[in-house]
Length: 601
Image 1 (spheres, rainbow, N blue to C red):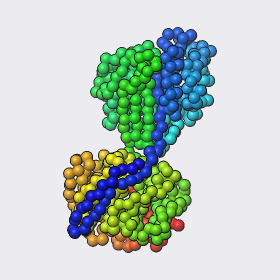
Image 2 (image 1 turned 120 degrees about the vertical axis):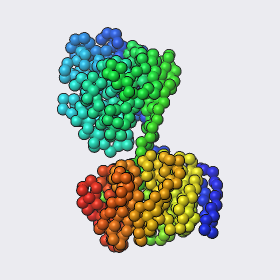
Image 3 (image 1 turned 90 degrees about the vertical axis):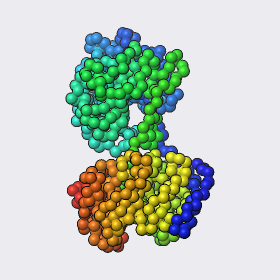
C-alpha cells in the first residue's frame, strides 16, 4: 500500500523533529469464510423429507460463495413417527441429492442432529451415523461419538453439540474440556436448539440450570456467538446470561421448513424476557448465514431470497476479538506464550527461542548496516497472531520489520531520529501493532495508526526525565499513551476509553527505577510497574487491588534487564529478567506459584 506523504515539524526544547506518513506493505492474512443454515426439512412426509427445490437452489448459491466449510445444525430431514432405519436412510439420500452441488464442490459439511433426526431412528442413531459418522471427527464423548465433536480450522475452534442424547442438554463436562484446552482466536459453537426461547418452547431453557452452565462456559471462554436453528425463521438476539456477560444467539432455521412467526418476546414461556434483546428478526424468508473471518475480525451476513435466484443481504453483524499478540508482543509462534528473544546490535541478529518448539533457537538477521544503538521492538504488525521480528535504528531513523504473514520478508521504513526510542502497542485497537516512537527531548509520542492508513498522530506527553509507559490500562483493547517519571513515581496516562483526557497519579518510585509493561494480575488491565535492577526490586501497582503497590524483591540484579511477559500462557505477566553475562532468561512463573524457570544457552 502507498500512502500520502506529509511532514510535520515539532519544536520542543530547541530540537526539531521531522516525521512522515509511513509506506508499509502489510498483507491481510487469514481471510476465510463458512456458511451455516438449519431446518431444511420439508415438514411433510418421509417420502418428501427435504424441501428439495429450496435446497438445490441454496446449494448452488453456497457453492458460489466458495466457503471453506458448511455447518448444518439439525433438522436435515423430516423423520418418521416410528423407528424405521431404512426409511431414514432413504430420507438422508434425498438430502444428499439435494445438496449434491456442495459435495461436488468439495466443501466439507459438518451436521448435527435436530429434533427431527431422532424420530424414526433407533436410540443408537444408526441411520444418522451410517450417513455422517465417518465424515465428522470422532473426538466426541463416550456415547456421542459422531454426534458431538470439535475441529479446528485456520484460527478457529468449532464445537458441534448434540442436544438429544440427553434431551435439551449438552454434554457440559466434555464442552468444558474443549474450551479449557482451546488455543484459537475464535470459537464457534453450534447446536440445534436456542439457549433462550425465541419461538418454540422446546429449547434448552427446559433444562434451565444446565442451560445456564452452558451459557456461562461459552462467555467465560470468550465465545461471541452461539449458532442454532429449530425455529423456522432468522433471528439474531443478544443474550444476557444470569452469570453475567453477553453472547449473541443466531437462529437460522430459514432453510426451507414451513415458516414460523415470532411475537417479539424472548423466553415467554419461561419468564426469561430479560435474558434476550432483539437485534434483527426476519420471518417468511428463505436464507442462510455467511460468516467471514479475517484475522481477528468476524462479519456475519444473513442472505435471503424471494425467488431462489437473487440473494440479498438483510442483516449484518461484526465483531473483533483481541489479538493476544498485542498483549504478549513477544509471542513469535502464536501459542499464547511469550518467547525469550535476544537482540545482538553488533551483528544485527535477533535470536528467538520458540516455546512451541521446545525453546529451539531461531536466529533472524535484521540487516548488516544497523548501528550498535539499534533496538528490538517486536509486535504483531500484520495482525496474524504472531509477533514480527522488528528493530528500530535511531541513528539511521529506520524501522525494519519482518512480517510473519509475508514469509518474513524485510520491510524498511524511514521515521524519527536519534532522539527517539521505539514503542510497541496497538493504539487504535485494530489487532495490529502501530509503529510508534517516543522522544523525551521533544516530549512527544508519535504514532502511525495502521487502521487509518498509517497516518501520523502526534501526542504531546511527558518530557525530559520521562519514559514511555504506553499500555492498555483500561482493558478496551487499545494501547493508552502513557509516560512515567520513575524517580518520582509520577505517571501520566491518556485513557482511550475516557476520550484521552490526561490523568496523573503517583506510585512508589526512586532512583534507578525504570517502568516496565505488564498485566501482572491477569485482569486485562496493565499495572503500573517499576523495576530496579541493582536490588532486583519490582514495584507493581495492581489494578485489581485498587492499585495497591506490591513489592517484589530478589527478582533481578545489577546487570539484569527486565523482560516481563506471559511465558506460561496463563494470562498473567510473569516477572522476568535477562542476564546477558549468563546468557540466560530467569522467569518467575505465575502459573506455577512463581517458581523460577531458567532458560540458558
